[in-house]
Length: 56
Image 1 (cartoon, one colour):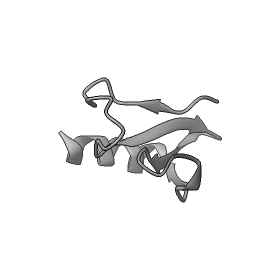
Image 2 (image 1 turned 45 degrees about the vertical axis):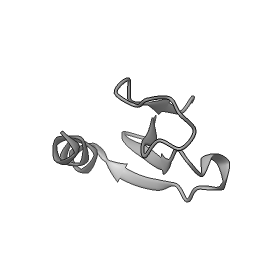
Image 3 (image 1 turned 135 degrees about the vertical axis):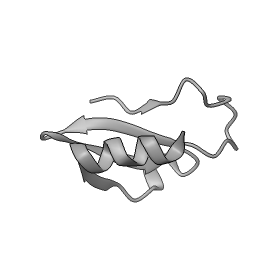
Image 4 (image 1 turned 180 degrees about the vertical axis):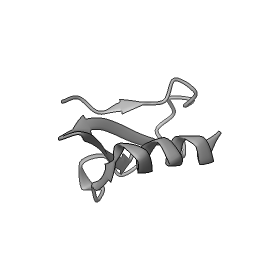
């Protein structure tokens, strides 16, 4: 699955943003600044929704 970044991200390479993708009933997230070198965190759907709510 392709990584997706928020449409609210400026798109600049130095922007503070995460990327996410669906994975096995949940989501994976990583730091967009680090790209392929970023650690990947597995979140269940409720935790991912909570992360999005906290980021608003």
